[in-house]
Image (cartoon, rainbow, N blue to C red; front, side):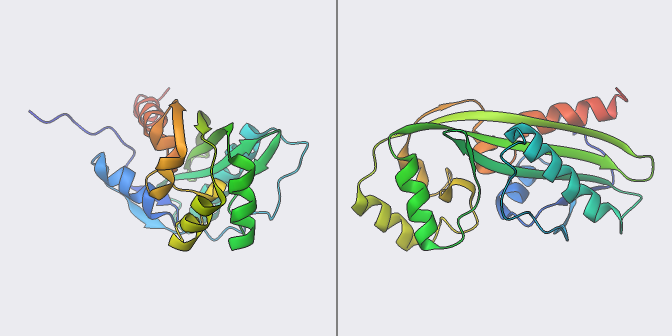
Length: 199
């Protein structure tokens, strides 16, 4: 007997990320994908806590899609890495990716994802975040260059993908694995259940 999928309908995933799409599809959700027409800021304000930062960007992404789809429920997310009191976003080029990986070598950092669920017709919304801690082992210059050659750092917060070659850099994970991929599915499922129950 198959369990009933609990989700808002009709649902839009407001994301350009193929990894978020894969995570949603693997769980059996039905949704359309729309890339949000939202320009992310080049840098985060040092005065804004990282959790507030990702939650705000997730909601702004959802709202930017909602303007054209007022009768849908919009799901959006934003992911960052956080190290030594600073937000690490997506690298701007290979040199920036090298700098990020060198900084992360032999450290523990956090990955935060803000998740927003938004119904524009009623203004109803749920916004939350998840945090996962990761320990990165010491990386040699040769390892970093080999990884940079794969191109897998492009478009990824923290310059690596846990589901790609970057997983060999990580010694320990505390928290949600899917959060590091880009969408904490445990949190999404909880938000969907609360949404369906009208809480």
